[in-house]
Length: 134
Image (cartoon, rainbow, N blue to C red; front, side, top):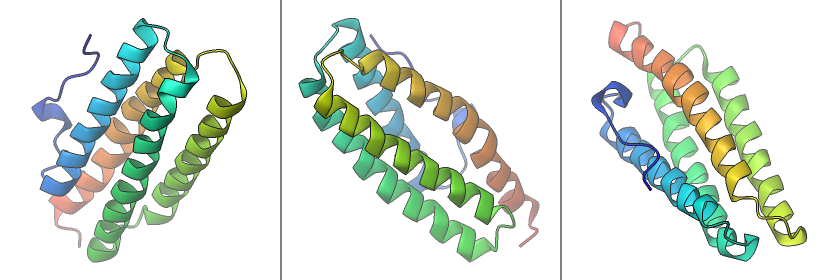
C-alpha cells in the first residue's frame, strides 16, 4: 500500500530536489510494504542501501544549493544531514545483527524525517531563495 503521495505542497520549485524528494517517497512506500508483510532484515538491506545512496546524492545537491545562494541556515541544515547519515549507518548495522524485523521502525523514522526535515527545514531554504535575499 502506498503510504505517501507526492503533492504540489511539497514542491520546492527546484527540479532536481523535487525529483529526489519523490525518490524518498518511493523508498518510504517500499518500506511500508515491507512492514505490512513483516519482511526480514535481509530483505531490508538493499532498501537501506538505496536510502544511503539517496541521502548521499541528495544532501550533496542541497549543500551545493546552499553554497550557490549563500543560505544562512547552512551549518544547521548540514548538521541535520550528518545526523541522518549516521542514523542510516546505525540502522544498516542493526539490520545485519538483529533478527527482529526493523521495517516498521525504519519507515517510522523516515516518516518523521520527512515531516520535520522536508516539510519544515527544506521549506525554510525555499522561502529564503524565493525571497530574493541572495
